Image 1 (cartoon, rainbow, N blue to C red):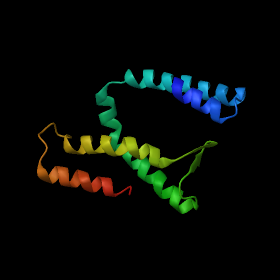
Image 2: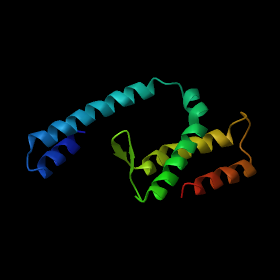
Image 3: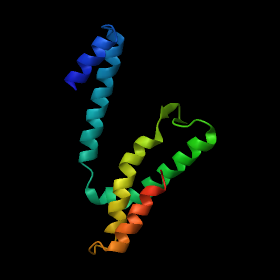
Length: 119
């Protein structure tokens, strides 16, 4: 974070407002990391299919809204493709190990097909 702060400060022409905004985002990010690390892994596994469905829905909505990359929700613009980076691995783990059994070849194959849906 220190290196990114120095790089942004330098690239902004040593603007104090830019560095202040960056540092605020760094603090918010660290708070999110602390909060998310306190959530048990079982909770993440339980909500994986819902996150996957929401992510695919957002990707479809962005395409039909005319903008190819960004979604505007509650005044915030973000890229749903960033959520895909979390949703796909979580969904694959949920799908492969949903019954607590060993992974089979067919389950792995279908899990790989799940990765093709958002792409």
